Image (cartoon, rainbow over all chains, first blue to last red; front, side, top):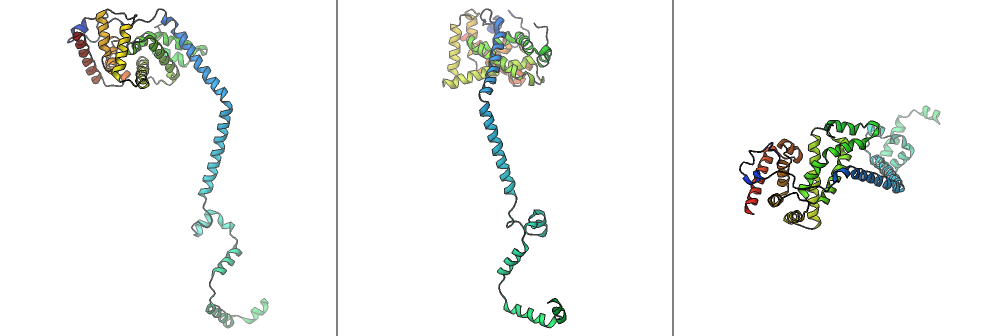
Length: 147
Length: 184
């Protein structure tokens, strides 16, 4: 019987339990513990071989999967970068916005002027006023020199 | 074989001389194989199941010992791994065969009666049946305390339960076992 190291008091209310020997109720087969380490080593080696052979067998699949992943990632990042860059028609057109956006250099000034003039309604009164202003205020000698 | 302390075994496993990690691991297996075998056997009863679970336990130990942080004792960690293996095994068994808890316990009890290597007389057989009638976790608490004489603090590290709850659990388990023996 094992000595009651910790719990004599704990079993004081359970007489039958206390009276029983606390010997191990189960037995392992003879020689079981002598061979256990080698069985475990075999299993470890099997597991390792299984991992290695799986990696070998699946190598082409792994390579294709990696290539596909790289292509998809590159495509997604390209799309994300371009989708974040606003189209010239969409940006808020303050002076600073234009400078920062870099689209400033892409403008064709003459095309813009033509578009602008084409959109302006013809105002005959305004043209007459300009004509009068030019007649009354321009220096004739200067105009002659110009032509 | 017991001349190596747990920390020496871990050190030898992590930094093996001549790259012989397997030798260091064998030392660890030899030190704990019997304790863990009987711990598992008392939970699952059958030797073949015990053999599988014990081997799986040591494979897991092999895979995770490098990451073992030593904030608990190696001994309690090994018991924890083994206990989790057993609980997982019983859970799977119930799921696989759609069995309620009581059926798994009665199956274990039948195995116990059939068991030719049970090292027990009639009264001890009755004791084992009484223990098997306990709920799973209470049974583990009872076994760890009654047979392994494990301290409550160590049991707490194994089962992740407070010392107070373990003391209460053991007290209730002992009372139930006594009642079962008297009743039969």
